[in-house]
Image (cartoon, rainbow over all chains, first blue to last red; front, side, top):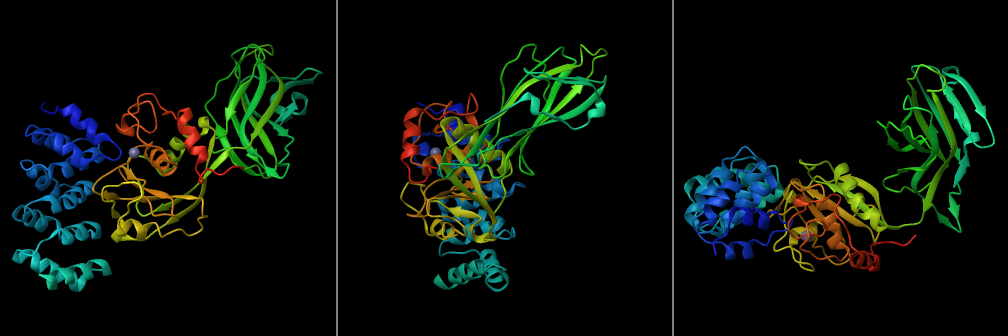
Length: 148
Length: 312
Ligand SMILES: [Zn+2]
């Protein structure tokens, strides 16, 4: 049975949603619902919808859109979601997020990256490795550039 | 503990047309269009059988001759510290009854309770502007206590921490539990501001959770800590998974007013239920239907059995 918008809203409203169970129960119709929920006024719910979208093959544009949001929690959710995206899509969204100047976002982005980096990501990592105010980010960036 | 109406002191005697102390009550007649403050000192046994008492609520027994004579505020003091103010009241009961005023947080009593009553006289005749006070009192109790420490990486955005603690108390206090806000600390840990919580499963923690929960300055063994973060990875309202011996939970900046109480409920051993009238609903505390959300008897038993609710 296809999942309804209200049902998806209810499942994501849980204080601790079980993303794997939710996306396992969702069919292709869920992509459009998640796009709607990712624009909800309740930014907590919207951020959960962004993350859930990354677990569905045909909803990844929701993650892409959130990366460009003015709302910090949506950019964070987008960064959290990167690890679930295929490499091409991940690198594309990562390029948008990595220069945001937010240590928490940078941490999530860098950790999500695989071995093949775009030139832009390499450049950003090099800059963070040298100049980030955060020891954690400098270390993560260096490790990512050396470990490839 | 009660005191008789006789003992009432008037802050501004010039605002009164008359005061009469009889065996049964004190009768005060206010001058037209005046306000005033009346004060009761409640005899206070701060320690009984070696146990410090907690302030549960105060009570007032009074009546008004007309709606033009009204109690508009009840403030409660412990020594020089005001512990609650109930403002915006408009109470003019025609017969003597018992009005009770809650003291949220049920604070330890330290010095002695004072009750200050704000009043308004808006009638034109003495008869209309008459109030009679028979007694004032304070209930002291001994309650099982959760000692909660607040550690802030990022302040929440949808509700304040004060609102979240008030919400937690609205669920916990009727269930017989006191929530003491034992300390506040800001933590400057930007890399943990979005903290990995993995699958957020009881007994399992990520390296970042273990690092974050290592911050237990001023926290006793059986005290719980709420870490307020910007977000969790993946996004949750909060997560109660914690390392052994470091009880606490994280609460995300987008959490609901009830998430704090819900997460500490998990820390005290509670599981999800499918009922949006209860604090432990698994359907999201943003969807609470009949606030404040309830704790039921079996949950109260579980909480009492937790080492983290401390018997006075
Ligand atoms: Zn929960």
